[in-house]
Image 1: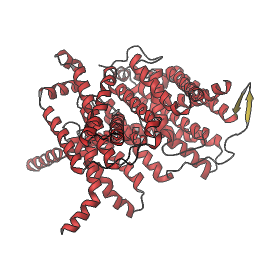
Image 2: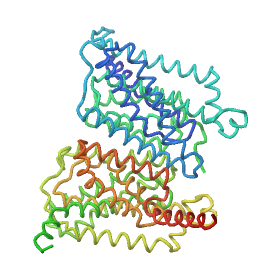
Image 3: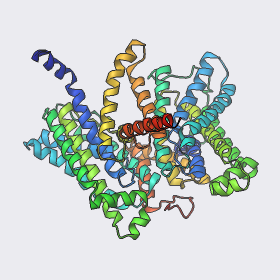
Image 4: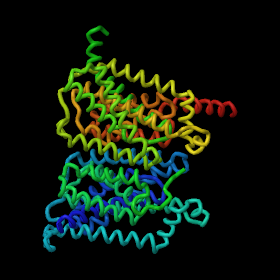
Length: 292
Length: 300
């Protein structure tokens, strides 16, 4: 039981980080960025390359590749979203252009790194384990949960207490009003993409470390799980995405324990479907979600 | 060119020709719901239902092929009704996500279904689909969509796409139209699935993943979703392109898999950014550009 909870929180912390990036962009732009999974995957490769070829310690490789993820996010915005802004169907065409960009990035990863799963070298991550009541917890799991919680706290601080956070919230509320108040909307959107992709990239590195595998298609499943998480949490709601991320992690781990692993992936989509039909605003979403 | 070499040529390219037709049908199935402004990504799920329904019938009964095709078309269409009633109340991105969820649930269902060999799928399905059958089906689909465009129903769909509340105010029964188009799209995807199953000898769950439906969407968007034949043009273009690129890419040392993915993504990106009405609008664009240039030269 205790073991299950630890495993669930561990999986959930990765889902939560990934989904927060999704929902941050959705909250600001009302656009789903389906290239998020490509950033997730490429960041894991960047971290791997830094460790393998430049022999950086993980402690240094992690922040560098997270920053690289942020820069990649700004590029994604520049290429796939900015040119479409102001077009009447921009939320559907943005969805499609981000799928296109994700495909291009995945093809690049395939060409550069090959289709095979790559692993971090032995000893890069701590492999000792601790006992916590009746649960065995690896040091890596503790570190991953701690990093995820720290990033959640940093994000909350950024959005609630800093000037950039206030600007992001203003643009999310109404881009037109924000522009009248003298906010450089384009720059704020680019910053949200930076933050969002840094979070997604961090999730990717942690995922790669956690399962010790990095491959060009590693973002695919997480992408769809991330959709379930933001729907469950309520589109655009940051606390919702965090809570729902942990909830889905726990739900999946308990499903495997009680029903068996074959229906693990169906859980996320069952939940997603049910929430959309019964309560489209999700757990913590804003009350009015209907667009005209 | 003599008869012998013509036959060899046909044997080499027969399957490419067949895939153009099948992909055309799949692209049309995405187009039907897009034509009233709804992005449904459940199409791979519908295709799976059609493939499995038809393959099971062929393998376990003596049903004639037309009846098998009919079943492959009707099963997903019937499933689309109870799916569409709640789901079509959602709009835009929410509808897209809900239908992604449906598609994945269908795939996982077949992965876990022992009756159809789980993840291995069904094999040794007799080949009943002829290239002509595929093109017959494609012609019928195009005819139906051609008749819809420009009819009363066609204008209603266009009105819903441009502004649904306004269309409702004018007395257009938007829900009924959206549901009909979802059912029609499901039927087309199912028919393509049934034809595909009896052309490729096999059906396996992994071929109905999210990537498959993205591929269909790419065909439709690249070809153009403002006219009914656009998706077929896109499917033909993107099915032929990798064949050409395989030759070129091989010579400069690029692997065919990543190259195909890269080109698909790049073409989609360029089209959505610079040619929102798709490849079918290209001739008109070029003509207009030439006229503008001529006018400018004249003025100078």
